[in-house]
Every structure is written in structure tokens, then in C-alpha cells.
Image (tube, rainbow, N blue to C red; front, side):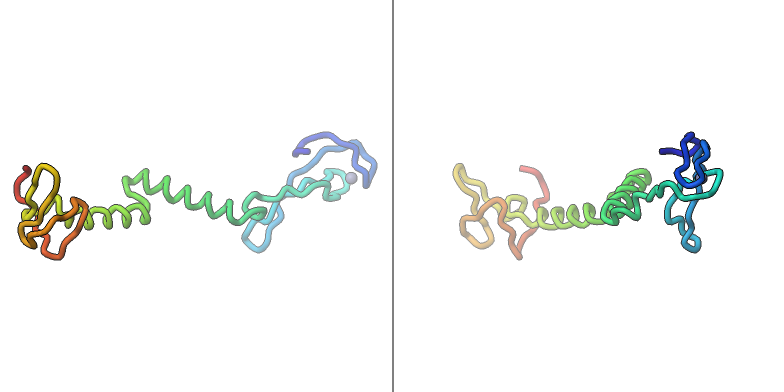
Length: 132
Ligand SMILES: [Zn+2]
């Protein structure tokens, strides 16, 4: 049923139409109700989605926040943090280190004189100054 719809009111028996009215809880709108325009009997409650499912409401809020962030060219906080971590780790990989000595089949570390994996990280890491 919706506002303005004609119906036979079971309370007053008139053929009348539905009025929509907001139910307020202080300053917060709780829900809408449909009332008989003749006698004022509440026929139906229209509950807001937000009161039905809080999780959905939260998701909606997050969505809105992320959409807003995208609008202003900002990445959401979580994504930013992950990206920074990746970046910091990547900078210390043995394959990008200036002590790296490439062989046909393996990578050696010139500093520690041992075989290393390209994705190893090392406390003595020094970034390569030129690409090889
Ligand atoms: Zn009525």
C-alpha cells in the first residue's frame, strides 16, 4: 500500500485514501506510517531500511565514505596502509640490492658471499643506483 491509495478502511468503514505521516523519535525519524485519512487509524508502518538491518546501514555508510574518498582522489585508509607496507618491503629485496651478483642460475649476495633469493630482504640492503 502507498500514500494516496484508495481503500476501504476496516475501522471506520469509509472508502477513503491513505495518508503518509512520519513518526518521530525526538529529532530522529523512526518510520513512516500510512493512516486512514478519515479516522486516522494506522493502517501500515513503513520501517526505514536503516532500522531493519544495522550491518547493511554500516556497509552503506562505508560505501558512501569510500565513494566520497574516491571523489576527492583519496584512497580509503586500509588500502593506503597496505600499499605503504608493500612499498617498504619491496625496497629491501635482495634483487634490488647493490650487493646482488647475478649468475646464470642464481643470485649471490656480494656482501655476505652467499646465495640469496630475489625476494629475500636483508638488514644490509643498499638500493641499486642503476638498473642492470
Ligand atoms: Zn478509517
